[in-house]
Length: 49
Length: 227
Length: 231
Image (cartoon, rainbow over all chains, first blue to last red):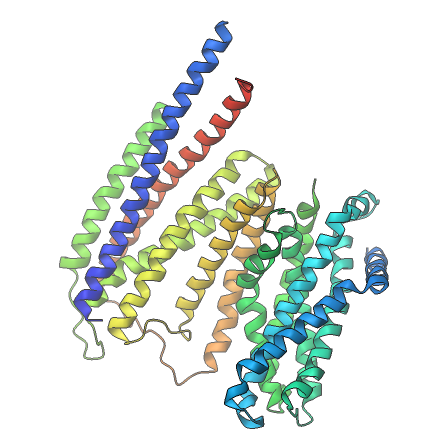
């Protein structure tokens, strides 16, 4: 592998990997907090009954 | 505590020799591995000389996988029969169970390992050139380190219901790869050259790690069995 | 709660600032090595983030180790959650370190991997242990899994330095093979590396917090589902 290709490849992998992982976590977090809100509302409704 | 451990070991060995399922399957398994190796190298028609560097890895891969097979049976038998719960009800130190298991596993695995060393000469028509005693010394010590770390790790792995069989190798191989297998293989290759004294650094490492793993197991095994 | 949020923002800002700074330092500020002994002086710039990623993976495993001990001693769920989060984030950084190493190796040495290289081998063992730890967590179904994972976290952490000791002996068996020689670092290189390490440490803290938040939300959802169970 040429040295510049190696450099580009390594930097791409590092930043794509890190930000891909962060984006994945963020999406999961958003989805979970939506679920959590829904569930909390359901619990409140249940208690009012 | 040592007396209790011996009692447990005696019980384990006695039940094992009643059915011989663990030792028999381990033994057959190690034969299969060696046959597989033999056919893998068959077309190269390797003689004594070319075989020399391959002996330690073949032996230790055989020991390692046959040993993991044995460790798997050793704990899962107890777990499935529920006899582990019975053992834990006994008024004794939990570490005694671990040390008892070490003694019985060491005895059984060593039996298989030594017979593998002997069967190896027959399968590969390999001549140890009178160096079989140094090789056996290495096997003695290497298997000890293997059993000590292996018993602790398989005690953890046996708690998985779905992937119990693969969990032992997955957990154990990274732990023993450089701490047990590599020194043992190096020491064996030095022993095959006839000079066991050259292998002293490796043997020292094996002994040292065995002590460290025993200390670790002494500290942690109570948690392994906690319910 | 409010303070917690502020800390999060703080860590994120610091991480971003240091990441930008580290990229600048690695690519522009630090000089290209001009030693004829180097085959690929430009590819050497991978080093700054490769070493930082390796550093974070060891740090992450240290956190797993300490949290495992705390969990076994005190039995609080939050220690276990932290160990789990740290292991998962650590495996990401460790993978990055392990992938970028061979890329540099192929440019510098012409081969991807050298088993004689102690650092490479140890990082690989660390990676295997991380993966085994996560497999164990996924494989045990019962509530015992936190306890068992904590035990394995301790064993795994202890076995890394042991592997290091033993591979030193093994390496000395092959004295003819040259291991990586970083040589003495110049001041600029040191600064660049420091920036990379600081940047990745803050990034680790930020990701760890996010991962921890996800674990906590998951268990909260489980609890709530149990509460309204039957609906």
